[in-house]
Length: 226
Image 1 (cartoon, rainbow, N blue to C red):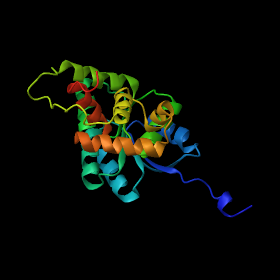
Image 2 (spheres, helix red, strand yellow):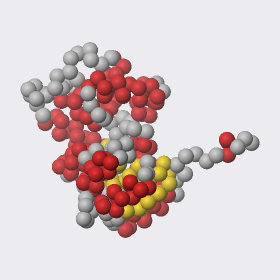
Image 3 (cartoon, rainbow, N blue to C red):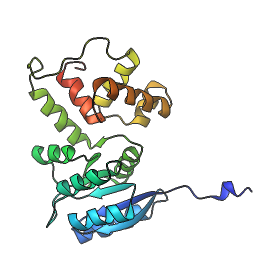
Image 4 (cartoon, rainbow, N blue to C red):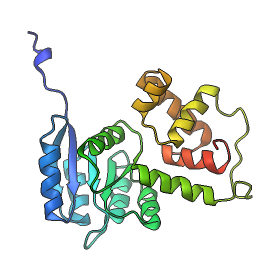
């Protein structure tokens, strides 16, 4: 057997920032037991979360929202200012509209509601780690509902000329709006994940947005996707 075949797969390094000791223990036990992840640190509030993120350099941070001293939204903003490429998933029981949009505006790459299954949380971490945005179904619906409130004909609504995106890019964009991850889009359209990533980058470049959530919001507000 070659030396290469005996190498263990590279694990995704996780930092858990959570003030509830029971939740911390649960996450450490459930995710630490997986062959996919390595828990590199545990923090109890926003300030220690920032310090741990900058010193330990995890791949993904699981960030609670409601914490003493410094909440997860402010902590995420500060982490993203220093380490913009670091991935942050909000893992919280807070589903109020204002807090959801504040969290997403802070630069969070994902939003999971506490109580989600281990399978869904594992999926969320993998999706965010590969560079996509992950939203729980109820959070995704909240985003879509909020966008629908806006009047598409408003003068402030950006208009996207027809033909800006290719037919295939439109197919990918529709699936992004529906909350599909890159692997799910690849499976639905019979494409490789690398090809899907290329389409997603092209869509964001053409729509002048920074992430998938912004692309979905713009697509809905402009009427590009119904």
